[in-house]
Image (cartoon, rainbow, N blue to C red):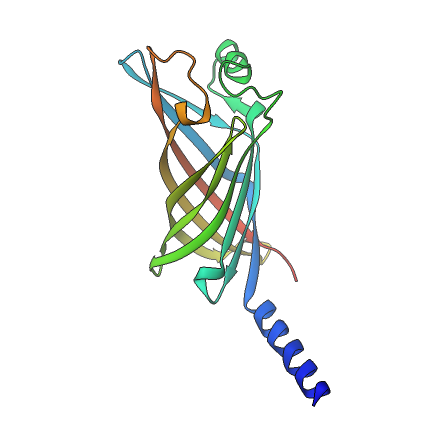
Length: 188
């Protein structure tokens, strides 16, 4: 009986593991863009040039997970002097808080290609809950035969809630964040 139970538990674990696929974010096809209102005139735009992360997909969507790590020092607005200011303690404080992190805690399917993903974002040393709508934008095989899936999301981030209040009279409180990524299935 003990052998039967042990075999059954092993089979359950193997079936559960077989139903999960892990995908890495492709750093050359991942874009994290942001915009924030400047002096009530127009949004200023920027991006982060270095990101990494993974998505685990299961047959049971509620067991899916995603984690993303953004290198705060890789901020790029196309203006070196502004980028240096964004890296310092007034904004990202990349020396003290080098990573911006998101880790999911729950997934819910809205339809076959749209998911409500809840989790926690850690920015500027402050962790807050964040729920986003993640859209699957495409799926296929690249020229090397690797399975790939594309996703996008867009959300608002309250910089004041993370302790980033510099320039409160001229720079918007809410930051629009847009993420687009291609993911590549990891080999077993």
